[in-house]
Image (cartoon, rainbow, N blue to C red; front, side, top):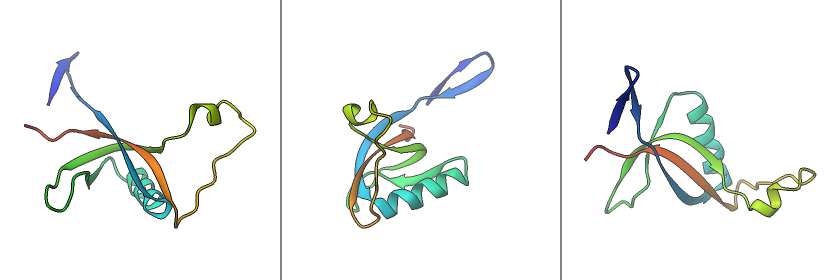
Length: 91
């Protein structure tokens, strides 16, 4: 779904927090950087909801990000909370 503005189609985006492993995050981030979008199931196997991801980033604590001397460390085998920006499926 979208709307026209200055002869361009602007698509609506939504956000969703998910928890995945650090390795899954790195793979998704790399795939997204090498393409213009990535189809991903944010639902379940029983109730799939395929969306087109436009951006993915780690969701960090606001207090943590205020200190520029600290850097997040990510372990590939541990879970991380990430935020997806995606285009919702057409209804």
